[in-house]
Length: 587
Image (cartoon, rainbow, N blue to C red; front, side, top):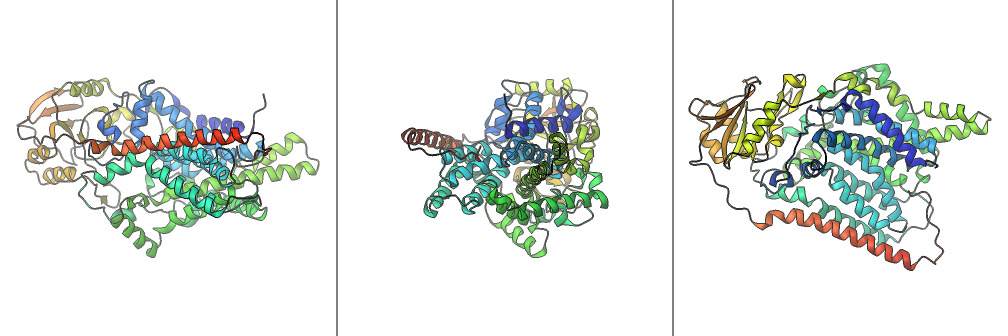
């Protein structure tokens, strides 16, 4: 059986994923920064985004909860992480013409600073959305050219991307708009009016498909205004000696210095990476690369747009504009972490490198070079991302290690599930933890997922330069009481909290309430659970059916997508004898 471009791209992605994750593929959980998976994530109101809280992990947690019903949490985590590499590898391979170009493009798409830094900070949902972008581009190109199932393919892609979270959906919609608007081939395109209708249709699908997270966000009980300082805290930064723009050009520039890779600060190494990007893109432009695939013209526009958005908040005037958007426009917080938009540019660079590799091999073959030799030399042109980021291999040289939750924690979580109703507040009052059993790695508090009920933690984000205030007013009131060393029980009761969980293996500096007058319910070697009693605890009013509107809208998107596929099948059947030649470029 012959393996095509996408097949070779998928195999390249799988190989990259295994090399990158390395020892992290062993049984156990990867727990660092925002990368939190648990053995059994419950499918409840919180994971579905209908509990009234700010939906920070919707629908990602719901997807994980569903998958966790058929496999252990650590297996789900490893499968999702490998899916990033396989998906983006196969996707970009479909945007070039040859298997050589597919392997080269897949290598660059899988091994770059964007993937490395987002993986290091635990943004697996971002990366799944990134992996879907090449597929979205191909589907949008098929729709733009009036190919069979074009509309249905884009609608299906947008629904699938919506499951990865808000970031992937925003990037995908930008990409669809660019591919539909920017013509890339001399082929007969659909009429402008038809393409405008397509844009409206896809905007509607994206709006409905993403309602499970944006609707609960709009109605959530988050009374605190967005922190304007968050724009500066999360703006793109220079992780190379050459400044912010060169850092973004090479796919880096994330705001968190703690996840930067050391070799990126080398003048020589960063210079080679920058030169590789410039040469690849320049060659692609010179060779009219936007004509090599129906999607690449729009991808080029989207890549440049993503680069501009990524660097916008790093300039003074742009920072003011982004601050206004974040603080004044509903949903504007999506622009706060600006570096994520560079994902579009990274996909474009991967296609440029793939095009350069296949062009170079063709030129060497014309000059009489041996087939194997020309292949090796062509792929060597695409090896600079690996050469300039070697410490990504082996789980970031062993930094990413699989760990197991202590049995005591799991038993305590099970004990909480048997207690009378009431929320749980976790102390010390900080969002991130360091556990000795996890190598003292900074990790997001896992108790929000270990316990399948309302859990309140400090949602302020501590950074090296400042603390960005969270959105939860209940958490803010509890934090004020803890810092003032006053009786914290009134604030807990107002937040619907009945149980206090104190982690005794953590530094107490962020704040622990006085527990001398509280009833001890359970204890382990590393944690103690207290009950403040039911009296006076705020009883949540029975939520109305309107809380499910977001999920209903998401289901409507699935139904509309299904109808689009059925309609395309009917038209395809009717036109089977029309003699239309399918486009071999759109895979």
